[in-house]
Length: 347
View 1 (cartoon, one colour):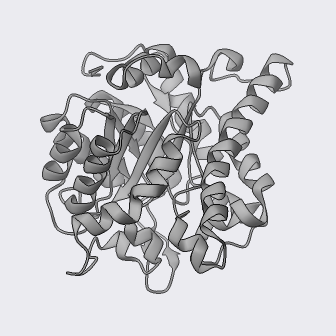
View 2 (view 1 turned 30 degrees about the vertical axis):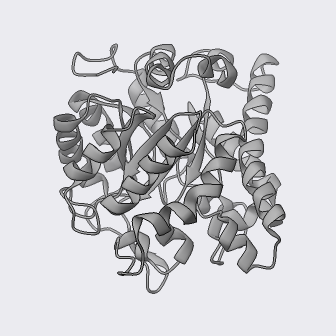
């Protein structure tokens, strides 16, 4: 799928992909939770990226679990994989760059394994049609500067006065260049907590000759602003201004806020909208643990999906603490619906 999609322009990639998927697409779910379930120890500043070093077979396993559950898009284990982070662990720059490439290779290998198994009839899919014909994209994840700091600032959006747009560009530049040339179909700039970092990403896409498209997904703790306190609408306008951005959305946000956020996004962009909230639990960045929500459950999450689609979203998945079961339920809900409603946009 990947090579054929890339033949089109950046602006048409997501349109063509969604058409091939039947009007909507399913994104994978939480990665770190699944790695831990399979026995990985990721209590480390590198978080899930640690497994690129210690247990790449588990990375492939998690990708396959999500493909089996109905995902059309799998996101690489590079969210917290930075050259600076790997070097701080004693790796060379060359080794760090190789691990970034490896994150994409593992995703592409999982896709090939999936297709091979489907062609041999190894799996049965009762909700996704013929799995062997299901389009699958690989999205190379780029986490925020705050994710690298591993101090919870990705959830506050406050990096300090010493961090400028230029310093953010310098921090991200080489990683983005490497991921763009590693075989991924697009880059996923995820959990963006402030306008400044979105502006830095746009500059990199436009200045560095990046030849694959991207999506931007922001985080919100109140349904109105990003963690830094800036309007979500202002941040989306930054993303919408870049021709290489083919989808815009929200991730790592409580499900209860997604409906209003979709409405806000539709006011300022005609690009496809992607939503992949967390489970509803709240992350305590200081103590590095998740706190259960009394307001939402996984069942609530899945029950919202039809409404999100009606409001105009067209790509759906899960973020932290969601599982292959969540993604399977989302795929089932969407496959049971009629063709894309009139509000769905394909620009």
